[in-house]
Amino acid sequence: QVQLVESGGGLVQPGGSLRISCAASQSVLSFNYMGWYRQAPGKERELVAQISNGDSTNYADSVKGRFSISRDNAKNTVDLQMNSLKPEDTAVYYCNAMSTWRTRTDYWGQGTQVTVSS
Image: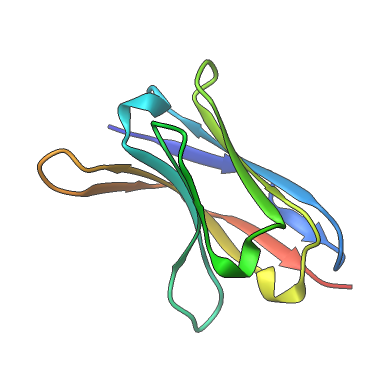
C-alpha cells in the first residue's frame, strides 16, 4: 500500500516563504509523476506543480516563478518550495503520486494546511 505523508504546512505572512515536503513509502521513481495539488474552501482541487520521473516539471500559471518542485530520489521525498506567497495560495496542499501504466492510478497524501495571512 502506497503511503504519502506531507509535512511543513503552517501560517505565513503574505510575501513570505514556506517549504512543504512529501515522504513516500516506496521509491518516488516508481511513479511516472509526483506532484502537489491544492484545494481551497469551495473550490475544486487543482494541480500546483508536477515532476516526472524524467525530471520534466509543470506548474500552474498562478505559481510560475514563485513555486519550485524538487525530488530527492535517495530520501523518496518531493518538496514544494513556495516563495512570495499570496493570500490566494491559502489551501490544503495534497501530495500526489501518479502511475500511468495501462491505466492512470493516483495516490494521495492526507493533506497539509497552508494559510497565508497577516
